[in-house]
Image (cartoon, rainbow, N blue to C red; front, side, top):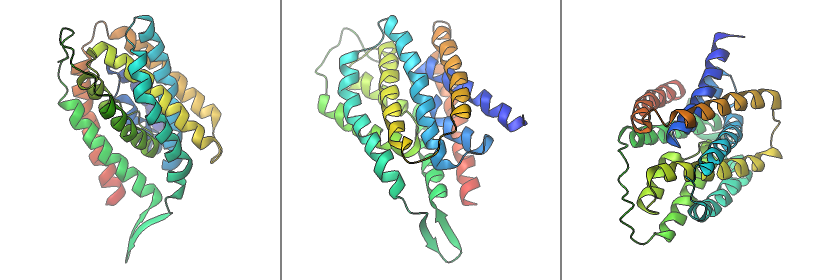
Length: 265
C-alpha cells in the first residue's frame, strides 16, 4: 500500500471524526481525499462521497437520536425538498455537463476541472463558515416562529450543492437549524446528521445506474469513516466541537487554495 493510500484512509477517519464532533464540515474533504490521494475520477469521487457521507452520518444520527438530540419533524421538513433536488441533480444534471465546459484557444476547462474548481469554491465558503463559527446562540427560552418556507428554500439549495459536489452541506444546514428552526446546537448537530444521511444516500441512488461502483474500496473507506464518527460522537462530550470546527476550517481553506492552484495552474 502506497503512502498516499495510507493518508487517504486516515482522511476517511478524519471525515467521520469531524462529522461526529461538529455535525458537518468533515464531508467537505471526502472528494479531495479520493481524487488526490486515492486517484479516483472526480465525478466518480462525488458519487462515492455521497455513499460515505450518507452511511457515516446515519450512524451519527442514530447515536444522537438515542440521546434525544434529533428533531425528527424539523429534519423531515428540511430533508424532503433537499433529497428530491439532490436525486434530480445526480440523475440528470451532472450527467448533462459536457466533457468540455469552456474552451478559449489553448485554455480548456474540462468537466473534471469544472467540478473540482466548483468544489474548491464551495470549500472556500465552507471554511469561512467554520472559521467564523461561534458558540450556541440559540436560547431555549426564546421561541419565535419557525421559518418553514426559508427552511424549504435552504433545503433546495443544500440539495443542489450536495448533488453537485458530494458534500453533506452541514455548514449550511446547522446555521439554518439554529437560526430558522430555533434548535439548540446539540440538537441542530444531531438533526443535521439525519438530513445529511438522507440527502447523500438518496443522491447516491441516482448514480447507481450511471457508473461502475468499486464496492470493495468504497466499503473499506466507509467503514473507516464510520469508526471515526463513532469516536467523534463519543469524544464530543469532552472536546469543544466549535474549536475543532474552527481549526478544521483553516485546514479546509488551505485545501481549497491547493485545489484551485492545481486545477487551473
